[in-house]
Structure formats: C-alpha cells, structure tokens
Image 1 (tube, helix red, strand yellow):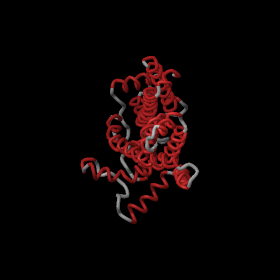
Image 2 (cartoon, rainbow, N blue to C red; image 1 turned 30 degrees about the horizontal axis):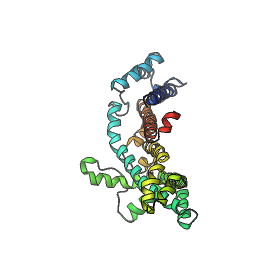
Image 3 (spheres, rainbow, N blue to C red; image 1 turned 180 degrees about the vertical axis):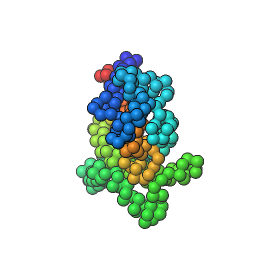
Image 4 (tube, helix red, strand yellow; image 1 turned 90 degrees about the vertical axis):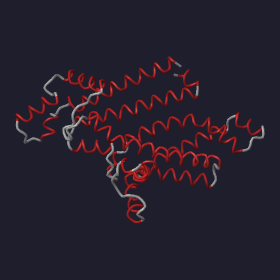
Length: 315
C-alpha cells in the first residue's frame, strides 16, 4: 500500500508541476503583453512600465515562475489589480459560497441517482427501467444554464418559493443561506445525477450476476438484504470514481450557474477576472481548480485501492 501511495503521490506532484507551467506559459510568456492587455492600447508608456514593474514582468520568466510558485507554497499570493487585495483572500471569500454549493449539488445528485439506478437495474427491460434511462438521457442533454433559467422562471418568479438571484450571506442564517443555494444546486445536480444513475444501473446489473449474490439468495436472504447488503456495497467500487470526479467538476463547473444566479462564488470570480483582465486572479484560480481536480483524483485512487485490493496490485 505504501508503494502504491508513493507512486500516486509522485504522479500528483508531477501533474501539478506541468499544470502550473502550462498556466504560466499561456498567461505570461506567449506573445502578448499582459500589462497592455489590462490597460489597453491607449495607455501611456510610463503607465505601462509601472504596471509591468508591479507585475514583475521586467524580470526573466524563470524568476517570475519561481517567485509565483514560492509565494503559493509559502501561503502568500499576488495582489488583485481589480480589487487591490490578496488573491487568497478573494478565493477564501468565494469558496464560502462555491464549496457548499458543490457539496449540496453532490448530495442531491447522489440521493436521486443511486435509488434510481438500483430501481432501473432491478427492473431491467421493464417500463421502470426505460423511464429511468429516459430521465438520464434528458438530464444529460439539457444544458444546466437553460435549466437554471427555467427553474428561476417557474420556482422563483411564478411560484415565489425561492429567491431568483443573489446570496444573503451566512451571517443571515444557515437556513436562509442554504435556501438560496437550492435552485443553483439542483441546476448543477441534474446532469450529474443523470450520469450517476446510468453508472449505478450498469454497476448493479454487473454485480447482480455475481456468484456471491446467487449464493446469498440461495441461503434464503430476502431481496432487500441482498440488494443493500451485498449488491450495493460491491457496486460502489466504480461509483466511487464517478462521485469523486463529479465533486471536482461541480466545483470547477459552477461558472455558468453562479453567473445565472448572481452568486458571489469562485465561478463568478473567475468570470469577472477574465472580463476585467485581472490575470493575477485568473492564474491563481485556474491553478486552484486544476489542483482540486488532481487531488480529488488522487483521493479517489486511494479510496478505490482501499475498497478493492486488486487495484493496489494492478497499480
């Protein structure tokens, strides 16, 4: 197990290094002047020179890269040109919205998808199975931003059950804040639930044909105990991978939904940073999102190896 973890950790570090190098090259080395991009073509030469010095663009590229990485490792970040505050401070404020939104969306998608997938698998080839598969096809086909707009029109404007946009803040109360995140979370959870339902159905169908399931039935166990005690536990192995990836994608894929609902989250921050040409914020936030995906994949590999020893030997 130690050798498996060491190999996976080396892959994680190498991936983060390559990703940080790619982000730096794209934003600061490829043809184009970041200072000119921020200030515009009508900026004065002395203003451009001052901004280049402030951004460190007057130093060699390797020095700028090492300074950036060293600052991140030491817990210090650059200063946002738009907000004039450290980028880490901005990220911390926005994660207080995006992280609960991603967790809530993941819980909703899991709570819907696993029962639906098991329901479809136990009724293979029957109307219930076709209904669940139809739902999954529709859920994967509908863009989440379109569903978000539709949910605002129905549940916020027409029925008035939920706020249409904005976030009251956690200081207004946990219940009020979570209530404002319900519609965005449902909009994010719909396609993920559709995917997870299909994966659950396939995994449960494969497990239902295993010999130990037939043995459990031959011993006289009722169908409920067979499904929840034997089938689901073993079917969770491939589902663990999907759940881990879904959380990473929910965290990184909230840009559109947060803008539809005007939520002050990480997705809206990177959208505003791109539109305002705040490359310091873009650089750090993109690296953070990449790191989240990589670390979640690492944790999924570890969980997979803990559940199934064959994965450790194969690794």
